[in-house]
Image 1 (spheres, rainbow, N blue to C red):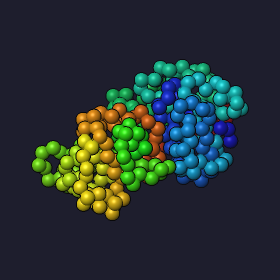
Image 2 (image 1 turned 120 degrees about the horizontal axis):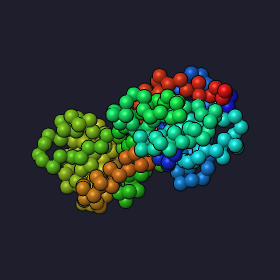
Image 3 (image 1 turned 120 degrees about the vertical axis):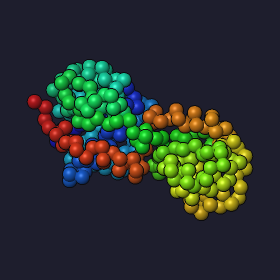
Image 4 (image 1 turned 180 degrees about the horizontal axis):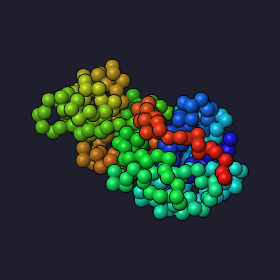
Length: 286
């Protein structure tokens, strides 16, 4: 079985996300898979951590993510390999150029972070219909807590190293005297940004099942809130930034960091690739 190279015109197009999705789809069909990351570019180490967190292992099918750009060198290194191109609406033209350049080695394409206006078929990659069209998805775009801790320069509690944990659906706590838990339930909050002088809202977020609490402003948090954080093992980030600054910093991470392979993200990938014929990508080139 030839190797499948996952390529893209630009970094952070979604290669790692698609590689994981293809690997899981193959595994569900009974095919053993090896997930590999080639190159030493800026995102290589993070991608290898993602692959390692889901058990990249060894297998009959090899899926190899290659650095962004022209995959010609990787094709020469892996004789008989095929290429799956991952593009976004902004890079569709460059992806089409890559599709033409790899010729018979082209296995297909995936359009990632598509908009509804792009249509079901997405872009036309040298006559190849996309294997999948992935609409913009908050779950898949959400950054991991490690990236959030770094950008907020936050003190963190209950954030395990090397444990994938996505921020999920982020909600800003209400400033008004709104019944906190009802508000967080209604907004389906998974992570909450709340001021450090709002202990009632902090507790309401925890009671509503928030997966992460981001406390802004740098003021001391009351002991009974910290006791609940410790009791529930809720990831807790404390930053000196004000709420506006924290929101702007975190917002910039969405879609701009490596895929977080936590349970919810993997489940979402399985849904998106449920109808994709991944096995056909490994067919020998004509």
